[in-house]
Image 1: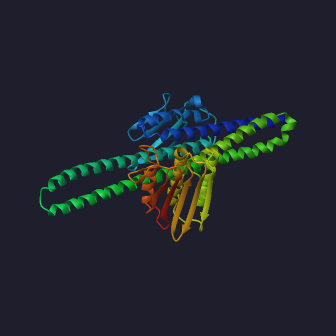
Image 2: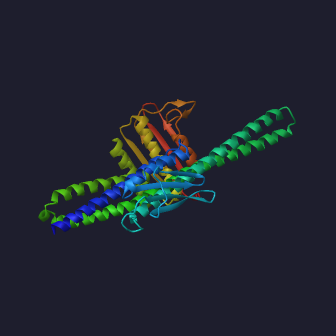
Image 3: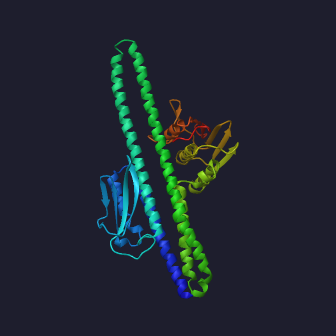
Length: 407
């Protein structure tokens, strides 16, 4: 019995180490792909370096990413028959692939020498690369649209300056040109909002993968570990199993925290009100900011995109309170009535100074309120602020609940 228990313990330790390696790779990959300042080749160069350490035999592992005309590989890469790969879209109907191979023969497992979890890992990494390319494509589209818009504005401005010296009929042409510019600006705002919502959907997909794959594997290990605890006293491994249990619980908590940081499941599973309760608890726990939540009216029935937009707006307002208000208390009041939702975020901080009749609630050059207003505008919503120096700030969000979900 002692030998069997020892073998089971070694097996559990090995499985736990493998899951931690996979989780670490996913966390590092997410951080690398979030960097928008680096070029694609440099990002993929950093991405490829973290792959060998996530597989069973790191010293004998090589990796390669092929995306269009770009090929990035580890220095030791070589074509072998022990290869695992997964495809991902890179835009314009083209596909790339990520490959991991062993340089020497290893014992057979779920897929050749590769584990079932390694298949799930490489597929998750491929999804992350797909999301990365989608995001870069959207950013490029926005830049090109902005350049076209700036060119059109410059050209039209020159024409309008000349038109001031011509017939009155050309004034109508100027008005039509201004309408065209306005349409381009609205299109640009919509693209920016869609980019944010697309990123949120991808973050939710990654969080779901973390929960469904790694989280469930860790939970199964915990069940099997508990089954061994009854024999631990007789085999002398009680202390070792306790160490393993502590490490396992820490890993489970880390996985859950990472899942919630990427995309809070409570927002989608339990609704907007439950999401606000979770958000209030997070600010109490992480920032020491007491947040009192009040809900008036029936539960909100809104699209996922509007739910995410309202949630991120409230979160941004609470972050502004933490950074600027020096407040002791904050209240969030949600009112749902007559097809209109109103959310009030009030604090008892130092208040804000008005500039030219407009209340500013962000750092110079910041995009907090600007981003909130632009996203709410896509749903027909608006944000207003009320402030008196030394008396705190009240931010009010108003939006209709019947706006269709954006595609």
